[in-house]
Amino acid sequence: MWKFTVSASDVVAGTTRWGVFWRGLLTALIGILIALKPWLATFTMSILFGWGLVFSGGWLAAGAWQPDRKHWGWFIYGLVLALGGILLLSCPQAELLAFAWSVAVLLLSSGVIGICRCLAAHDSSLPNIICFISSICSILLGLLLTFFPMTGLSEMFWMLGILLALGGILLLIVSFRIADPPKIT
Image (cartoon, rainbow, N blue to C red; front, side):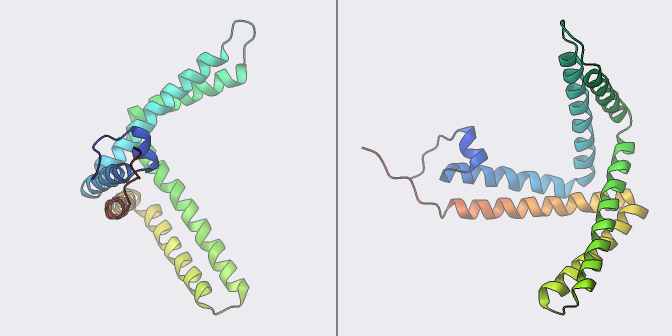
């Protein structure tokens, strides 16, 4: 029979049947929420990242200002991070646009490199063909994010939500297949 107590470490690490079950349930619910409301997920990510920058920048600046010596480089770096977080919180759309274009550059460059690598291999094996097709898809997604950044981000978060929901459902299925630990008497 299942025991009904579970610790946070069990959920994060998935070390017990209940840990895997709750991790799967939470992952599936988060995935469904992201898939249903991708714009809410993007703006939530933007706001959380902004607050993270403000707090980490303030922490760095405060830690760099020591009584015996001053670490000016770290102090300035902390102030720049905090200022970036404040700017991000004041205009989250700008961060989303910068994020979309950064991902677009990564996708375009990885697609071009992948195509060059596949063509240089002079091989018509199935893995090389799959690499070539995935490189073309990477370029197409990079172009989508370049020319339509907000639509592309919405689609990316929608796909992320679906993948998280499917992963959570798989964890739920696996949790029913994990054997109970032996009882110590």
